[in-house]
Image (cartoon, rainbow, N blue to C red; front, side):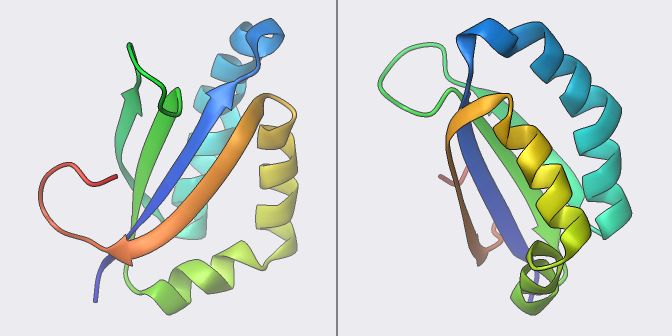
Length: 100
């Protein structure tokens, strides 16, 4: 069953330029290399919600969980953590439309 990995975070205020360079130059290409399919990215304009939400598709929950325990994912995640705060993720069954 196809699943969606939903990741949320807030960008560190003093790291915005470096964050965007990292996301475009390293994060997106690497999540694709791992086998995820990026399908959406949302930015919160107003309200007390995470600033960024990213949606990735994976063939199965087991596939996503296997990726998340690799050293390569750990290194990529540590890089992301140097630019963001309040990171969280969840794996849910994928469906059409916005999911939070």
